[in-house]
Image 1 (cartoon, one colour):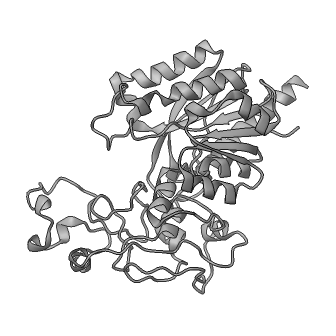
Image 2 (cartoon, rainbow, N blue to C red):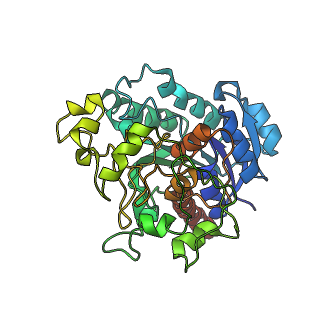
Image 3 (cartoon, rainbow, N blue to C red):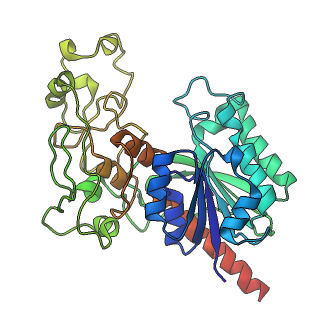
Length: 373
């Protein structure tokens, strides 16, 4: 019997891709973002994309589209939009309507009665109302018969070349003790961290603002991560860098690998940063290092906000480079405008992290089945 999944707030489908890699059959995804929907449809041909706000998504339509009956779905996945919870949003709070979208998720849980649930969110969710959001999620799921545990997962500890912290809620209504996947990468573990060089070192050079549609990989022996990302792909899509203005281009040559805004001559600094303390804005105008990890990939790889400058080339990282740092395989082609593409990449659950979660769930499910037998 197939183990099935539905992905709410699916975006481009990073979590769906990870679950599929782990052996789940993703039947449907829902999101309000049209460009992400086009990407999801192109990369998940067996799944049905249902566009529109989750408030308009009915249980009847989901059951009709998937051919399921209540209680038959294995996993309901998805994280309500992060912005209301994020540490980058200083007005966050439970009054924000986006922070109550998890109630819509709960409505779908109640209607579909999946065996398992997976919710992902930013760590800032812990600080809303002194933990009010986390407590509300767990208590309301408990009222529906679900035992839920959450843990902070570090993406780099699962083979993603990026420092990324996310809260992952896992729950079930079938009485299986809940645990989270064990880290596999880093000091003292079976595999080292995947570096930026490991991740993007095989992608061709770009000039500022240049796009290379259907580019070729650089010659040389690919790393194991690069082989994993390439799969059967023979060309590189979405390898397009944003065009930086001249004032930024004047700043970049002054920034060495591992450097930041502090390396820019004072007279070239943005006005606001001339007043900044040297201890502030540590990632701003940061240049990556080949042997390091990426900072968290956001919905805009804006060099004014983070370390998104290529380790050697004077430009911001391309959409494909951001996707590689988010552990998206190269066959994953992003649709929409370039801005839309960066948003899809930055909002996603890295598929490699999604696979680690999916593999762990599959192990718990199979262990239960063998005990039942």
